[in-house]
Length: 128
Image 1 (cartoon, rainbow, N blue to C red):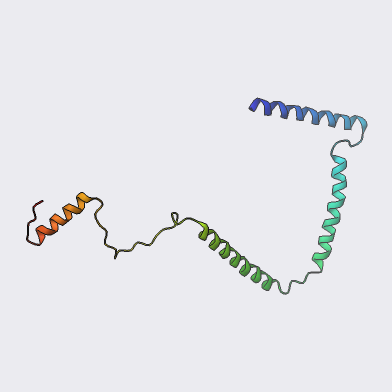
Image 2 (cartoon, rainbow, N blue to C red; image 1 turned 30 degrees about the vertical axis):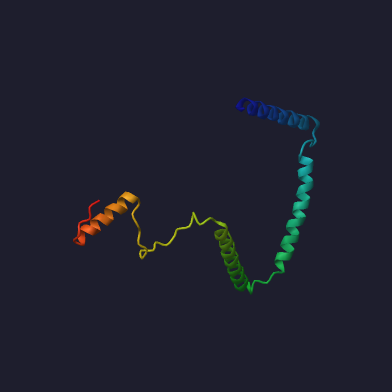
């Protein structure tokens, strides 16, 4: 795979040098430079329009605009988080530990041993 990428990139570099050599030999632009020069004019027009509209903007209420954007962004983030949390499985969420719940023994043997010890503490020895 690496060899194929090397061969393709080497071929593209050779093609680039060949096209540049033809441009220099004929003294005119052949490859993408014509397209880039047309796009430069379009980009310059767009930048001039932005500059024109930017000069008409009043910055008196900038603080209010930024406050509005921040509040709405916060609301949007909270809404997205609630939707994401709602869709998540409860497996990933941490459960609150309730101490008041009496945990039983993990197995029947331990349960049986706990009952036996409880019986010994109460004074009556149960034989098992």
